[in-house]
Every structure is written in C-alpha cells, then in structure tokens.
Image (cartoon, rainbow over all chains, first blue to last red; front, side):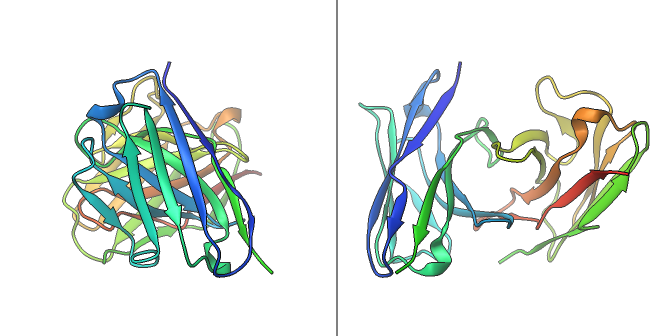
Length: 119
Length: 107
C-alpha cells in the first residue's frame, strides 16, 4: 500500500524557515518524480515544486522560486522541502504527491502538514 | 503560464442528477488534463487523466471529455458519496496549474 506521510509543519514568524519531510512507502520511491502541492485555508490547490526520481531535475512555481528548495534522499525514501524567507501568503497545508507513471498526474497524495506564517 | 478556470464555482444537485463541470485553459493543453475529487479534510483523489481516461477503480458514472482549451467532467447519476469539490489540472507543461474548484452540494 502506498503511503505518504508529511511532517515538519508548524507556526513560524515571517522571514523564518521550516523544513518539511514526506516519508514514502509502498512503492519504488527512486523511480518517481515527486511534488509538493499546497492549499491555503478555504482555497484551491497550488503546485509548488517537483523533483525527478534521481534528484537531477528540480522545478518551482514562481511564487516560491529562490526561497524554497526541494530535495530527496532515496536511501531514506524521503522527500524534503526547505522553506526560507516565509511570508504570510505561504500559510497553507503542504502535501506531497507522487506522479502516476511518467506524466504529471498525481495518483497518491499525503494528508498534508499545516504551515502557518504569522507574528 | 497557463491559467485554469472552472465553472461553475458551486452547483446544487440531487441524488440521481446529471452534473457537468467545465474547465477552460488560457492556452491549449492538448489532451493533458486531469480531474480530482476532494472531500473535506482529505487529500484529493485522481479521477480522470489525459482528459478522458478513468483512473483505477473510478466508477463509470464519471466521464471526461475535451481537448485544447475546453474540457468537461460529467457525473451521469450523482451518488451520495459524490458530494465533494472537484478540481481540474493541466498536465501539459510547467508550472502545473489547477482550477479553483467546483463544489458539488446537496440540493
């Protein structure tokens, strides 16, 4: 059974940093591109970042480029999102998502971890 | 960047009704469109990909159509478990983009 479990969220002041983790199990982690998607309270879905299976390719939404860094440790089956320079508008539930096959459809999602940026 | 616009933003319907949700892309995405269902407090579930292909174990009352810029999700006979929010997503190019969602509510 595929499982994606996020952790690392919490309350942080504007300008602060957090590192999110996503522990994966039930599939060959290194074979799949992984993504972070966020959802602000009561709002829609926003794609944040993606990383290829080997980690050689990383991609970001303009809203987070230069502030967030996606990475992965295939030996630990874990995906990360380092978030620096946090802003109030980054407040959201952050979920990791696995792609289906070689495309950009997300067939498994974690439940998410809440990041709140507030003073 | 490609923008995705869904309509309506909400729809009230009864069990057994046919429900249609539309998604329009700001530029052509070919057939690279997915639909997701999300229930409150839960992660989204993939329903349809490549505009019209049903994901594993998705009931056949769900169907998708369209190409280019205009796409449709249809629920042929609404069931109690279908009351949820539905999102479209263009999967043609980065940055990926989702529609703002359509909430299907009980009438």
